[in-house]
Image (tube, rainbow, N blue to C red; front, side, top):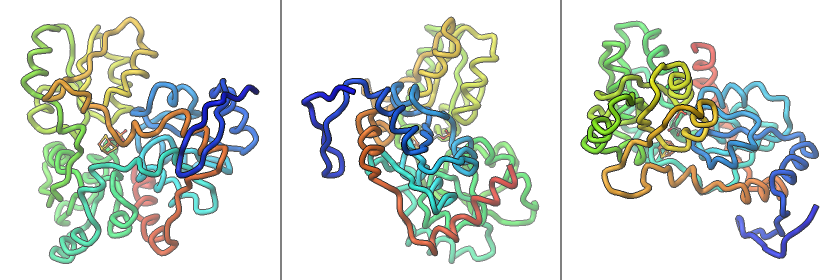
Length: 323
Ligand code: 13P
Ligand code: SF4
């Protein structure tokens, strides 16, 4: 293996980088008995080296089932934290510990505890995009791919708090006909799409179908031919007869869409400004270099208190059983 003279800084640790990062990561994977789990919003290079790419539900299932000793989580903090909740004895690495989530941040534990205490008769269903503290205060966790299914299984007379994403919550209300008490959180990426520019784009591409993630605002969702989780959007784009798609979610998913359907056209839905703010700044903190260094240094790792872990595990297990 060759080493460059370049060095790279990560969590106050420096190391020289090999020329062939892909080969070096494969070697470390074997040596460490590690599995690399990646979300679709990661850089294409990271997606290409991952053992499994998926949506939040798929990644949780993989984390629950893996025999590997080390889980390298190429995603954001709440995802790696979920993997650690499911695997307390495994080393769970996140290439950049600062890879957070604006949606998880929009639900601070103290404020949520007060909200919950004000509605003691409500069952708490929380979207997986939240911290372990919020999970520990929840009855059932859901993801964008099973939220409708999970809420539908709750007896009709049971009042429900849905947190933290108001857009997914509104979508679940529409789909189930249930009244939900919504926490007013949202994702900075999915609220950036411009309805006006998307409709203009649709006029320019009359053959294109608009497909959207349920974290988008209602004004965007009402134009969508199909709404679903990242995996559901990918699968829909592969099986639809349409030659083109306007994709209203983080554009990292387009790497997989284009790979699996090279003859189709995938157009990222435009944000309100002419910026790159439809890319998740948290997800994009992870790089192939940081992933290599995290494996090499066995750090940064996810840690959490055992009391919170046990309390957060119960609603996650309930979700896995119910979906
Ligand atoms: P899914 O991949 O589960 O649809 O979630 C999207 C998302 O926002 C992850 O942060
Ligand atoms: Fe969080 Fe939104 Fe980024 Fe997903 S896309 S990690 S919900 S900020």
